[in-house]
Amino acid sequence: MCLVLDKLEPQKSIDTELICFSIKSIVSMGHYKMGIFVQKYGGSSLATPELIKAVAQRIVERKRRGDKLVIVVSAMGDTTDELISLAQRITSNPPKRELDMLLTVGERISASLLSMAINSLGEEAISFTGSQTGIITDERHTEARILEVRPERVKEELARGKIVIVAGFQGVSTEREITTLGRGGSDTTAVALALALGTKDCEIYTDVDGVFTADPRIVPEAHKLDEILYEEMLELSSMGAGVLHPRSVEMAAKNDIVLHVCSSFNQKKGTIVKRGTVEKPVLRGITFDKQIAMLALKDVPRSPESLSQIVTQMAEEGIHVKLFCHGAAREETVDLIFIVEETDFEGALKILRKASRNLGAKRLLTGMDVGSVSIVGLGIGRDTEILAKMFKILAGLRLHIQAVSTSESKITCVIKKKAVEEAVRTLHREFGL
Ligand code: ADP
Ligand code: ASP
Ligand code: MG
Image 1 (cartoon, protein in one colour):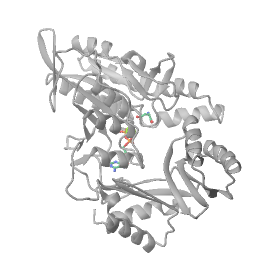
Image 2 (cartoon, protein in one colour; image 1 turned 120 degrees about the vertical axis):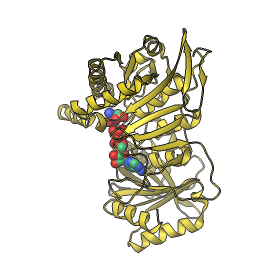
Image 3 (cartoon, protein in one colour; image 1 turned 90 degrees about the horizontal axis):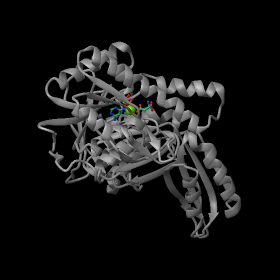
């Protein structure tokens, strides 16, 4: 699977005095020196007024140690889900522009409340929306990409000694419309700001102690990793590990920003996500995704253009093909298998119905009752012993593997949805993670 890296480049307009160090960026502004840190707090860390006050306390203590802080926040608890279901109660197909107007409210609430909490503890804070922060995106409502960050106002307020609170997950498009960055997108806001402000690190505070070998809510014996490489983290999050937004990892990798994933509830050392190499392939973690759908065109007459036509149409409709597999290849026909997000199923079905007729495929099969399990580790996609072991473990659970996809750093098997969690626990145990 290829990585589509964000086109975001380091800001050319940043002060020339801005010098980056590995842990701390010391910025010379006026006559004094200070370190800028970007921190992000997730929704469960801000779910109640009490939790917001506790986060404010942590931030104030850090500020009093002399750090300049930019804090990115997510919406409180399940606010985003609640806003989506509110929209669904009005219409089953809300216009994406209006959905963005609605969803950005969640992060505005937590940003303003956190700012109030900090001010009441005696430190000055100011909250900004994505647009006030200067986060410029493309026009793809609900899945916008950051094109540029113009953090002038952020820098001005930092220079005044204020703590800047930024509503995550949102920006303003080149057409001056309010946009959102996709579910979990506040992580990406934080990394984009770290990049724009010239810091080489970004701190992500969440409701677990770091990145684990598997989702600790599904695999109780999963353990926290001290470090993980960008490539591995990207595969984990792209294939379902919600702990980091995949695009935040892409952007961090492309720009060498070290991510520190830690708990917002304690002071334990978290996980560092960074560049590196391994001597031999090592299995790092296991993840799963139950929100996918499979569509298969069977017996498609071979033609060099068929696949590119379909993939182009999917891209034009904003449908992200999570996995693509070439099924059984016969002399004259092939099977084409697409795995998409559940929410893209109807759109993908429309395209494949048309393609099926145009290309003369024998059948179009679809399945919503599927999920994926992925094992991740740099180099494991080339290791046939690991591949064989994964197949053996799944066979031991009497599971039919409906599709397989490998890359340099991952092996993914599509199986029936109901078996996914047991498969994850068994793989975790049998691989000795
Ligand atoms: P936040 O609100 O802080 O952004 P998220 O819910 O987006 O938090 O992400 C944290 C959640 O990610 C955890 O509660 C955990 O259930 C889930 N998760 C999935 N895979 C992993 C993993 N490998 N390591 C840690 N957490 C994981
Ligand atoms: N509040 C948004 C969501 O729930 C963004 C985020 O949490 O990062 O997806
Ligand atoms: Mg998140």
